[in-house]
Amino acid sequence: MSSFELYLFFGLLAGGYVIGSYLERKHYRSIFAREEQFQDVLLIAAKTPDESLSIEHSEMVTGSVVVSVDYFKRFVAGLRNLVGGRVSSYESLLDRGRREAVLRMKAEAKKQGAKMIFNVKLETASISKGAGKRIGSVEVLAYGTALRIS
Amino acid sequence: MLVSNLEQIPGKRIVQHLGLVQGSTVRSKHVGRDFLAGIKNVFGGELIAYTELLAESREEALVRMQEQAKETGANAVVNVRFSTSSITQGAAELFAYGTAVTVEDE
Image (cartoon, rainbow over all chains, first blue to last red; front, side, top):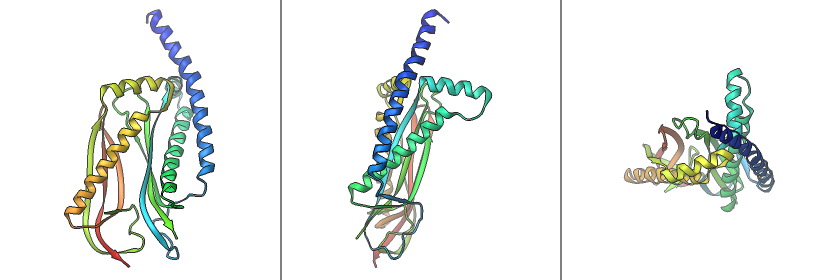
């Protein structure tokens, strides 16, 4: 390894750590704010809405996001792989992805005036398979049926 | 065409089942997008170009599913599910399927 490669490696590591953790904090702040804002949209995992509800309109809503980890976290996760155990760098990635996807779905429902989303499903797909270490990202999709109640 | 991932359409009654309908699309990102995503990957966070690409493709899979449903004479698709699989490096298949039905007002 030449000294240039070494510098590049440490530069990416430091850049990934500083900017990556800043972006993650910023993302979490925005997630907390929007979770508060969309609190009135209820998510229900049941398949059949209650008979007593008088439903005005129903439509399928989706929310999706692709998120990736930063260089530093990917490096740490690589080290973690040697000894096994909790890989917290990827835990927060998936947490962010799911919450973001759910929030986008809620936003779409709210735009239609719906207050309930039934049969919510979450799906996670790794779109980086085969791309080696270059892209460590996941796609999270949330979908359900939004109901407008009269 | 009504689309729902519930087992029925609320406020409607299913009068006829017309079988499974499906729609799929395989997409890959172009080199420029891949390159930018590679840079973004150093810092982490949302890869907006990919999010848009996948959302568009999923929409297309849904449209294809609805076209197939229309051919069978259905006016609604219930119990819709999505599935994503990566086939090779840089290409993903987006798949939507559901049951085509005919519904009428209750």
